[in-house]
Image 1: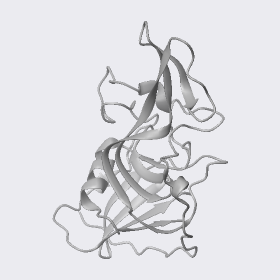
Image 2: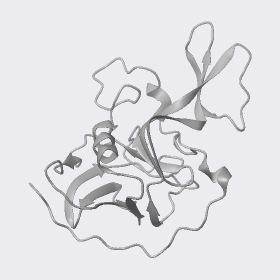
Image 3: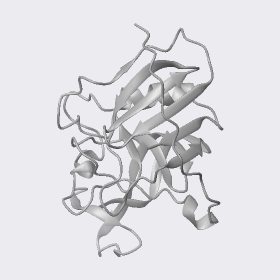
Image 4: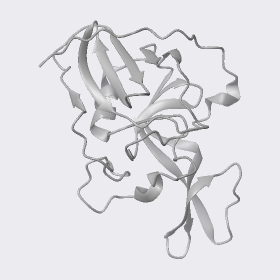
Length: 211
């Protein structure tokens, strides 16, 4: 079923970005730690959220895609208050995804943006985990490599960000763990099957409105 819903334009415009801001700077949860990295590596249970991430913490009865047979220019509207992303083709709403946006202190900034990079098998340049070299077990699942040194006998594994769609500095949409609230370092986490549909249907220059 195709649904038509008007979208409200956002008022703030994008400012020019410094080159250093292009680091992929989202991923983990805030002070409460969302458990995002609990599933790094293969998920050894029914994988409903891709090969790297555990299933959402709450049932997802919101996300859907109905846009394969619809034409029209794509546009994405991200509503942080509702924790949802809306995908339009022309003025037709063809998909809705549950999301997890930036937590307090790492807020996903409101504004009008465009897709500036697509990376199918992206990994964070900043966040990840430390694993023990001898046992391959995770010894720290909340690592910011800028502020933590790799312990002796350990190694760093960058956080997986499949279907990464960058739209502002280091911020983009991608597959990620959804704890049921805003928990990322600025990025828009999505269920894997929805990030795949969004990734397949956007191009460089696709508008993204965050409100």
